[in-house]
View 1 (cartoon, rainbow, N blue to C red):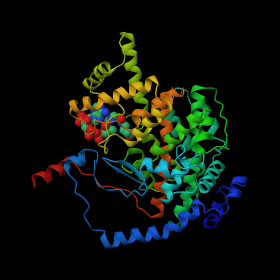
View 2: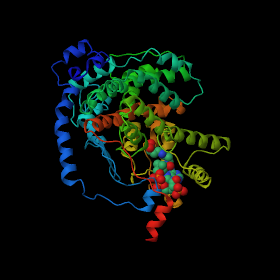
View 3: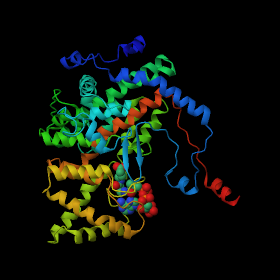
View 4: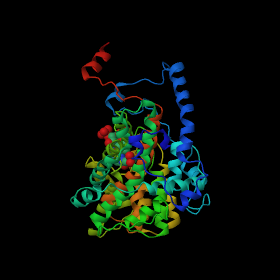
Length: 465
Ligand code: CMX
């Protein structure tokens, strides 16, 4: 692919790794080759749709939707995944169980263990199920791109330990922007039709660099600041070692965790922000850093830390009162939360109307790996009572649990109890969905996003008509 790039930018593009793995996989069709072959057809297909059916009406907008956070308005093209209210997420048409059945795993045997994050990255970018060899070549490529610019580690080390890990994460990624190949290519005046080639370089580099940024923050805030890598492992396994965890079962959890948090169609705040900021031709580094800031809100990704905080507060209260945590006390605590006009973290969803399949697969992981865990049993009991409570409360459109309701408990089981950090793990994963779409945004030449806003006076004028 480097042959497409201008001379001044080519010098910035990383070299193909000269490792045994890379050499062994030279005969494998690479990710870049796969994409370059797909782009012309996809461009032509979209151009035809726009030309022949551009004026076809696909929805209407009510005043409720206009003042209600644009719920349900179909106004964004998203290639990589689709979210059905009843069925949940499909990644390029595959459900989570489908992915678990067909995507390459660490052992190399499909269905034996969780899919590798690299498998999902390949699937989301290309819509093709990769071979194990292709996945291995992508692992080697990501490892070869992982080095952080020299100024980033001292910067991260200088941040106050009590700064929220998500703020540190966003700062760390923004600071890596010095490496952006796309930003330099844009300055050099490359034609619009070539943007996607440079954006792909950045996307792979951002995804490659995030685990070390995340691990430095974790080790600085909670441990000794030392980060040890093991690049003989896959992306997730190496990330676990960098965090300081060396347990094959935890590696499997991380693989599952990183896969299921990648993408949730385009309307969620982190994906949408990445897409919006990227549409101004900001490069992938700062576009995804913006997405991380959206993920850091308690109604979105921060809910995973809030769930653990809620459960700990519940346990503290009833321990102090000498009461057990059971259906009765959970119900009492839930009503206290609701009556205080606060949300039950980990429950509800803007699109889903059933239990989130990302919750279900985490529950299955818990049943397999930690059926007797005390906190897992608490989460199970909450699941028994909470939908009924929320239905009785009467406001919530979806009384069922979402992904954030279960993730923290699994981490806690392995001694990963620093829940203020949990959203960073979500952020490592969400990069894959948001950035794979960003590749297609530029490959398909999608324009600046700029919806029309209206004033309250204009809305009144419409009603009075
Ligand atoms: N607890 C209490 N009230 C809730 C609630 C919950 N878990 N979920 C929704 N509600 C309330 C809303 O605040 C809203 O109240 P108002 O009418 O007073 O504003 C009402 O019920 C209707 O909301 P909704 O249509 O059901 O849900 P929204 O699409 O507006 O919001 C979400 C979706 C996720 C923000 C909301 O369900 C929520 O706040 N959940 C708790 C936080 C959470 O778990 N977020 C993570 C979501 C997944 C993710 O992005 O990571």
